[in-house]
Length: 144
Image (cartoon, rainbow, N blue to C red; front, side, top):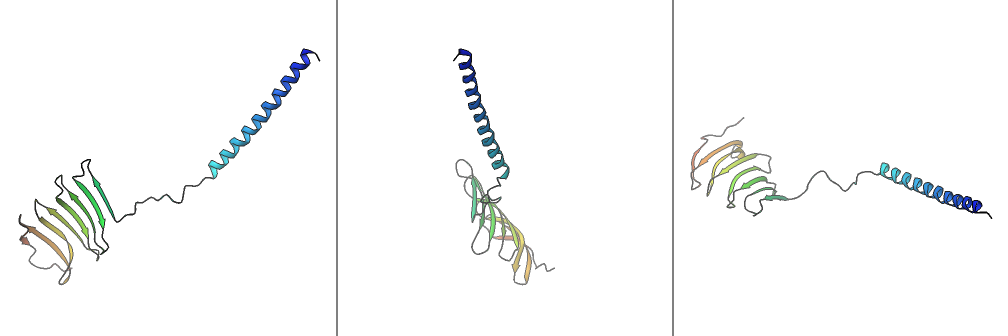
């Protein structure tokens, strides 16, 4: 065999290897492409957080916001200051009535809401002193 024949055989062998490699690579890329196209989002990923309570705190764990759903049906969102004292709260009772509390250093100072009162559904507006004793509140129920 001449050196030209040997070179041609080497080129033909390399060409066969190269052709096989391109075909295998093409099939693999096609399969990967089809796999990506047919992939569906995981059914385990939820768009919501489900918990009984969520608490957000600063780096020192002092001031916080907490959302709570109690087993007795009360739901609330509460905010505490750097000393851990409750300062503001929004609550919903089991009946669906709502109330807002603004607190001072020791006690709630202002309560506003729609509550279940003696005569059914009533407004609630109470101003309290620093000892938590009412200094003014609605004198009568507000039926509607």
